Amino acid sequence: MREAERAHAYVVIALRDGHRAPFPLVDTADRLHLSVTPVRDALMRLTGERLVEAHPRGGFSPARLTPVAIAGLAQCHMAICALALRSRMLLASPARPTPPEPGARYQARAMTLCAAIAAHQRNGVIADQLLLLSERLAPVFASEAHVDPAFQINLELAHDDWRGRRLHALRRRVAELARLRLRNAAAIAAQLEAT
Image (cartoon, rainbow, N blue to C red; front, top):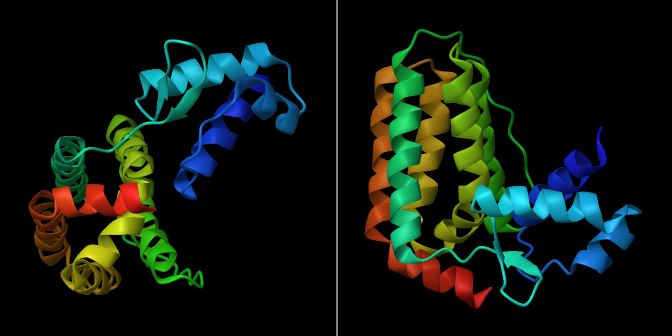
């Protein structure tokens, strides 16, 4: 794996795991035993992907998710999920990860479902965009379970629909999750700020 790719993967995993602190260039490079250049390249790429923000005086930090950003991401995510589910695909049951903390468990279940939908999508562009949006929404997934119990219920029903190969019902459930994200965008953003 190239050095910049390694740094990119490190930051993406940290963001998915809820890292909210800045990414000091030198410290991040030291932690990865890399020079500063590939780390800077990776962080600049992540800035383009809107996962991190570059600061005028140097340095990078995780991008803030405002209610408007959450609403936009939810709409895009729902549209890509719906597009992926419209095509014929081989359905496999997603695994049941069980991290200890409730928000992390919900986040893992949501990411698993998105990854399972993407993995069985024949169109590689749609699959890549779904995975990219899912990574961007990972902190939202972790917070939304605390905001409204309806998220938990709908995600469990979506997993049941997936395992039962009920695509039409799964499409409706994905749309309902997106609707809940739109309705609760401000509360989710406040929850993210509090963590």
